[in-house]
Image 1 (spheres, rainbow over the protein chains, first blue to last red):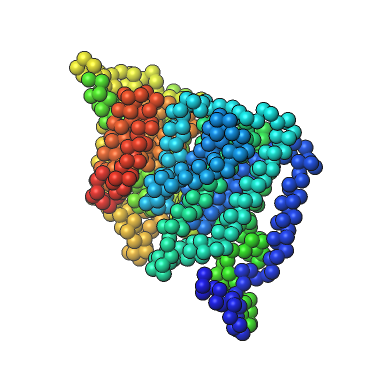
Image 2: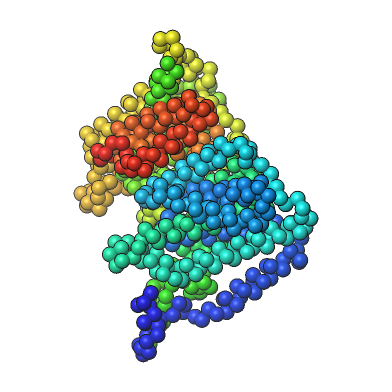
Length: 349
Length: 291
C-alpha cells in the first residue's frame, strides 16, 4: 500500500499510477443511478417481475461472493450452500422466537460469519481440489445436523412465521428492497475490499504465493477474511431466500444447485472481475426464464455453457469485452501511465 | 453381539467405499486432478448397466464385462479431450470443468430418468442370500463378494503401478511430464491410460453400489463422491492400502452410528472424517505410496 501511495503522490515526471486507464467517476454515478432506478421498481412493474428480480439479487449476491472466493482468493468452495442454508435457518429460528424476519436478516448474516470460523479451521489446511470436496462434505454434515432438530422442522422444514401481517403487495416490495440492499452491500463490500490491502495481498498470492509470503503478506489471514466475508454474504442471500420463499426446507436451502448457480454465473460472466457476476447472473435469469417449463434443463445448459467458457474463454464474457475495449467499470487493479504510452502494469484480472 | 455384527457389516461396506475411492485417489495421484464428477460417472455406469440388462436380458453379472471396458474408453476419451485441455490451463480449471460435468450429469439423469431410484439384479441369489455365522451374525454373499473384489482391484492396481511397464510410465509421468516426453513417451497418452483405469474402477463401483443398494441421480455426489473422499482422507492421501483402511473405518463408523440411532448412519461417518481431518490430517497411514 505504501509503495503505491508514494508513486501516486510524488511529482515524478515519467509516470503516474492510477486505478484505471480512464476516469471512472461516471461509472460510480451510473451505478448510483441504476440502484436508484431499481429501488423504484416495485412502483413501476408487476410483482411477477420483482419476484424474478429477487431471484436475480440472490444469485448475484452469491456469485459476487463465489467470485471473491474462487476468482480472487483461489478458494474453490463447492460447499457455499452450507451458508445459504444456515442463513435461511437462522432467520427461521429468530422468527420462531417472534423476531421479524427482516430484522433477523443482519443477525443471520453475522451468525453465518461466526459459524464460518470453526468450518474454516476444519478445511483451511486443505488446498485446491481437496478443499473443494471437503467444503462439500461440510455442507452435507451441516444439513444432517440441522435435520436432527425437530423443533425447527427436522427433515421437512417449516413455513416462515412473522410475515402474515403484511399485505401481499407490500411484502413483495419489502422483499425486493431487502434483496436489492443485500446485493448492493455485497458488491460494494467486495469492491472496496479488493481495492484495499486485501486485494493487493490476494493479487500477490495469485502471482506468486511464496514471494508474497516472504514479503510479509499474511496469506492465511487474507484467506480467512475472504472465507468469512463469503460466508456472511451467502448467509444474507440465504436469509433473503427464506423471506422470499416464505418457507425453509433443508433439501432446498442446502441444495448443491446454489453453489452450481453461483459458480456457473461467475465463470460465464468472468471469474476474477467485479463485472463478471452481473453478466453471468443476467445470462442465468434469461436461461431460467426461457427454460422454466423444462425442469432441470436450465441448469444443464447453464453448466454446459460454463464448461465451454472455462475451457475456451478463461476470463468469461466480461473478459472478451475487456480484451477488445479495455473497459473496467469497477477497477480494482493499478495502471501505470508512462510518458510514452499507457501501459497496464498490474491489473487484478 | 449386535455390535460385533455392526462392525463386521461396516468392514464389508468399507470394501465398497474403497472401490469408490481408488479411482479418485488414482486420478489425483497421477495428474493432480480432483474429479468432482467422479460419483456421477459411477451412477452413469450403473444406469448404463441397468439399460443393457433391461434391453438385452443378459445375465446381470455380464453387464460388468460390457460396462467396465466401455467406461474405460470413456475415461480415456474424456482425459484426452476435456480434462487434459482443462489441465493445460490450470488446476482451477479442472475443478470448474469437473464440477460443471457433475451438475450437468446429475440433472441430465434427473431429466431423462426421473428421480426414481433403481437397483440392479435384485432378484439374484448372490444379491439376496446370506449365510449365518453363529446365531446373530448374518453375512450377505454380495457384500463379501464386493469386499473381495475391492481387495483384488487394489492388489491389481498396486501390482500394475509398481511392477508393470505401463505402471512405471504412469509413475514417471506423475513425477515429471517433461522428462517423460523427452524420453520418448507421450505423457498425455499415459494420463489417458491412468484415467481409463480410474474410470474402470468407477464403473465397477457404480454397478456394485447399484446391486447392494439403490441408485438415483443424486447418489453420485451425495453418496459416492463424498464417501470416496472421506475414505481417501481418513486413509491418507495417495496410498492405495490407506484407501482400503479409510473405507473400512468409514464403513464401521457408519454402522456403529446406525446402531446408536438409525438416522445417524451418515452423520457418524462424517464426524469420524472430521476428527481424522483435525487430529491426523495426513491420514491414518502416513506412508506415502507412489500411486
